[in-house]
Figure 1 (tube, one colour):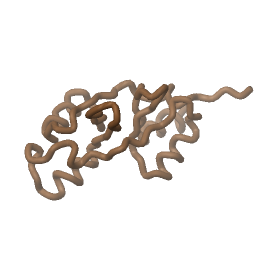
Figure 2 (figure 1 turned 135 degrees about the vertical axis):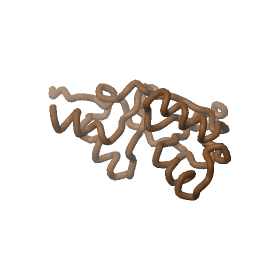
Figure 3 (figure 1 turned 90 degrees about the vertical axis):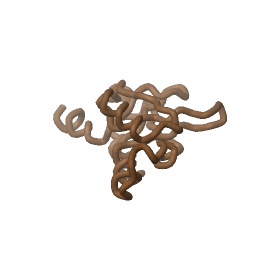
Length: 130
């Protein structure tokens, strides 16, 4: 049986959450403090789903329309629901999946929980140069 590297093996553990009612300023400060490009939006209740906010969302939702980070809440520019990647997916399929759905960053999910995050740029280093 052929063994392969799983998505969870290359996922970063730099996975951080923020409340959807937080300001974009709060999100940017947390991103800067944790050195991450995305934050997962916490669920409001058990029937809810998570969202995600990325640097690209901030550029499109705050900077381009010339708003201030204090006047925009995270929930206004987040993507919801989050597109997640199965922890057990063969890593060679992850770049194609992300490309097909125009996703640049996504959490990795195992047993209904996010366990890490994958950024499309890391494939340059993990797959092409290994």
